[in-house]
Image 1 (tube, rainbow, N blue to C red):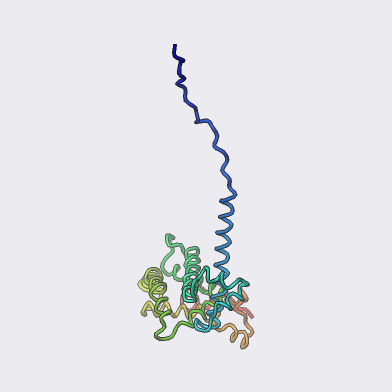
Image 2: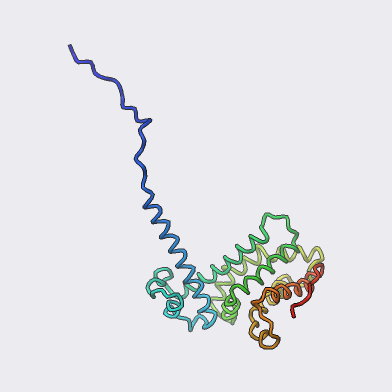
Length: 239
């Protein structure tokens, strides 16, 4: 008589899988966070280096000194000075766009004039927080500059055509901004919102007013509102 063969199968449905180690994932996450922090440190130091010395005179060695990092670590993240310069520009404008999205979300029901007001007020705050940004941009504003051409094509023109100019045109159509070329209106507002930062040393020397004083920054913005957005009344200026 043949032995009866068992037809039962191993039930694995209730067998617990061995616990997966999270050590590897945590380590990878820490490495990613460290890399992000390192890149930001390099970008912030590079913004100052390019702003203060210009592209030609700036050096990776001095950026390494500013950050306290080894030169090879910087070139590991950014293979050349031009790549680093472009990364600085993209990072700075990325920060500006993120701040705009926070203060004037694209899907909000803000009117065009309110959106313009919030975005240029945010730009004023950005220039005061990152005073080297204005000089970084000003260094590149000269004829036949290939970096300016790249900046205009890659960042500035899309930013204007996709976001800022439509809002300015809509506010003009509503009679709430001067009837002039929208690009001129934009650069008028850029000039007004960046001069407190760009001439802060002169302003401090002549009048004793510090752009780092929140009261001064607030009074200056209220002056812009009174001039460009007359529906807002300025408060008393700081003494």
